[in-house]
Image (cartoon, rainbow, N blue to C red; front, side, top):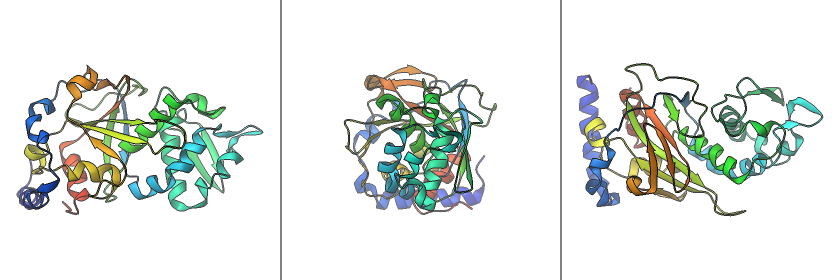
Length: 281
């Protein structure tokens, strides 16, 4: 049950959404029934959403180069590969944060690598990328890693718990009953060729109007790009019924694995209202 204060803020957010309504695509309304939940995921992996889009996008080229080589030093399996350090990814605080998140996504649970006195620990979120310890990833594995990364993006730094599910997710945990109840969106990253900018797809599942008082594509764009302007090439899509197959949080879209995010109701509203510059706290 939302508090009076939260409802008041949600009303303010709806007013703001109306002011930026020029960004709204007509299909947002036409496809609203498609957003209805179809049964939440029964297995997946939990995490904490909190990586800034600015850090991710500034370092995505170095990140892709890092995913092309083994994560561990071939001569010292407990250290980061010098080839990754040579990409410059670990030269800045933002880059080190990006590497911390990608190790959570792509390295086996508990695998630790050190560099510059910092320890990076694998979270075992993905079931497809464990080979990164000793060798570079394939294009499909890189797409899984980047998709996992973008589900963790959060512009405002208001960290919220998320639950991830999909064909590439390890699926070793169950969402706590009554907690993760809002299926936010289905996400996918497409690497169309060497040296090309990744393409980001988002299929919204949450009804931001009824849940948080928001009716705008701006929030979905901000979720990935970090700004209301689509500067990162994200495509907000409402064709999940034809582009994706699967159910219950396990979707394959465009013929490749996708990742669904499921959140607590309060977490969803905190995330998206903060993306629009409105705080609930």
